[in-house]
Length: 284
Ligand code: GUN
Image 1 (cartoon, protein in one colour):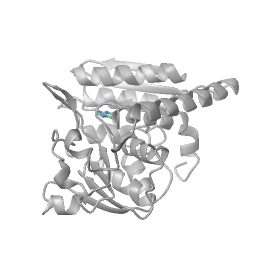
Image 2 (cartoon, rainbow, N blue to C red):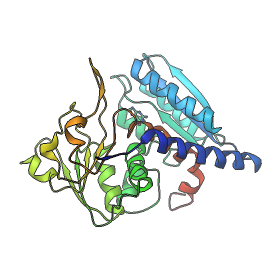
Image 3 (cartoon, rainbow, N blue to C red):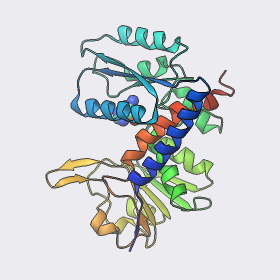
Image 4 (tube, helix red, strand yellow):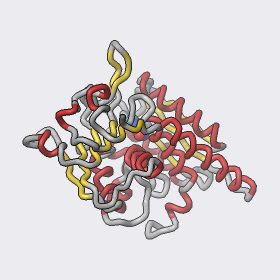
């Protein structure tokens, strides 16, 4: 029987730790503020933004929220970001993605000051991670490291295979696993003999975006399986991993829902609370 890695429990622990830290900071007269920007009203984004604001409220972070019309121009959005970059009372800036098609996402990400880039998407944050310098780390991969560490799963020296090479998950995940001294392989849609490669993994991280694609044929006996996917099927939510098929062969696995998902917001909160520490670096 595999150990079920409980992301709900671990994210709650992290949020409680952060709540204590924020209370201490408040006693010292310091308040943490996150600015959250949503452009348009994509229903999924509305749910994510609501959950982020709720987490802020729980922890004691002040959130200031900007709900902009779908028709907002790139210039108007960047103007708001620049205003927030210059505000001393704002620690973090989050623009919920995706933005409407007429706005260039890369330009928006680049406009956010690397000192306030709590999503860890700015090229400077990604660059710092890749050369081992301090900076904000993308929340989902950072959350996966916490899931592994807080479940007492050793990373050092392990074969880690990541399926998916996105800028938000696959690539930063690889860099973080490397920082933890794993031997890392990234697979993608053009990988030959995918199953051969994934079967080498002691730790297999699936971020493919295809419901239940990863069956036991992809998994080595005793591997740890981390499922980043989330899909809404008629029968309910599922991940990229076929949980019922894989669970009997692995040693530990994240469920969907309740695995990786809750960690993303917890790590966003971590980035906000630790903005000062993260910025005490070469950045300034
Ligand atoms: N859209 C989906 N996931 C994310 C995320 O982690 N951050 C932002 N800003 N937008 C998203």
